[in-house]
Image 1: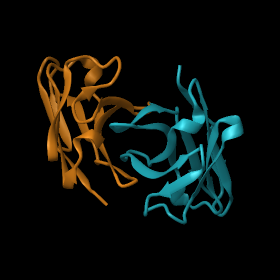
Image 2: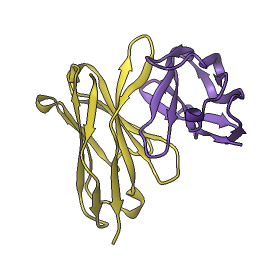
Image 3: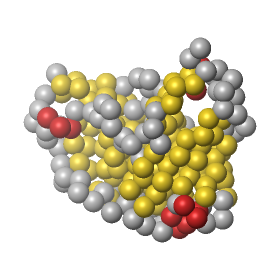
Image 4: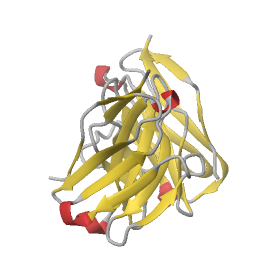
Length: 120
Length: 108
């Protein structure tokens, strides 16, 4: 069974750094893209970026380029999303999702989400 | 970047009724790269439709997708109580992924 398990909720202060994780299991982690999606309270889904763990190729949405860093450690089947200096506006739920891209492209498996709260 | 616009924003219907949700793209999208997701409160999104019209594993046949080019539709033939949720379309184009803003299907 394909599973993506994300790290737990975080409460941080503005200016602090943070790295959240997404561990894949039940499939070849290096053969599928992993994407990160932001959902602010009561709002829709926003693509942040994607990474291919096989070679660490990374692509960012223009809206998030320079604001976050996406990385992966294929030895432990884990992808990461990190901030160097959090802002209150980073408060949101963050989802990771496995991306299948063959004849079609879609997200067929999602993590449970990580709630990040940034408040002074 | 391709922008997806969903309409209506909210759809108020009764169980048993038919729901028709629209997703319009700012430029042509390959049907292969258009997907639909369902999200319920407190849950992660769930894949419903991929390739514009193919149902994902385990998705009931009351859900169907259609369309091409810039206009795509998700139809729920007869709403069940568990279908009241928010629905998003998503497209992939040249390494850029975007979502529509969502359509909420609520109980009338």
